[in-house]
Length: 393
Image (cartoon, rainbow, N blue to C red):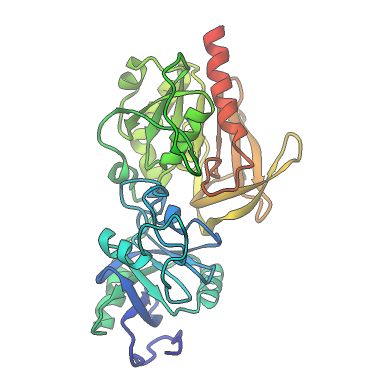
């Protein structure tokens, strides 16, 4: 079946899936995974590996992921590479049909796993053309739909895409956050051994606020030498301080940071007054910036992939990073006490800050990225080092 990428094109024979954009653009394709329909923001990810980690990253809540790499699903699915137990992306769009898994670690097929998770997949789409459309026009609202019988109410799907409010002003952190406090167990993964255990020795205590965290963040904190307790997104400053933290970690997560900041920023400000070491990643980085008086903005297309170059401004070292964000800290007018530490070499957008007079810093990218790159693990060591120095003092 040839790809149909023009608005209102007639449905080709054999089409069991459709992607409908809010502007009326209709893309016929082949559905797999779950049957049904879902609405979200359509974005693209340029990673060549790690599709399972992408689909289970809570930061993708409310989004449909277009994979620019054409072969997705060919290494199957396994139980070890999940980033979270909560929902991530609502669905995915790929170029080629998903073939049978060919990997010694595979325990299942992508299509079957998507069906089990209630996520829709679409194959047979010209993802290069779709990516170009997003780059030129920005990330649109869209509906993804799969029906084995090929029955679709296109006008209704277009209207649903148009009626969806979009991510601006949407707080999704409280939806994907864990609901109860828990002590984190487990360290990073190694081939043949699986995940390591959390040592029981005396370690600096990091309290991590879960705004939609990837599990690999907590594993890397343990690897760097911390003991980790995870608390829900709406935990109060008093509840966090009762845990006697040596430092506080602000996690990644989905949605508009300004919306999440309504309850997160007062907590972060209270923690900043205690001069605790604070480390934020992605949404956590943006919330730290908001607490320091900076602003955030919605990006045209966002940054999503495992190949983004970031310049470290203090020594001009370039890190290759993993990113997933549609909002950014506005670096055109940063407050005097906010120092920009990292910038994207793609567009100059902010990728890191530090606060003058505070032991607080954040980065926009994901130093915990699995399967990689791993250029930025030093940030976890920096945070744990701050906690150790505080204890020694």
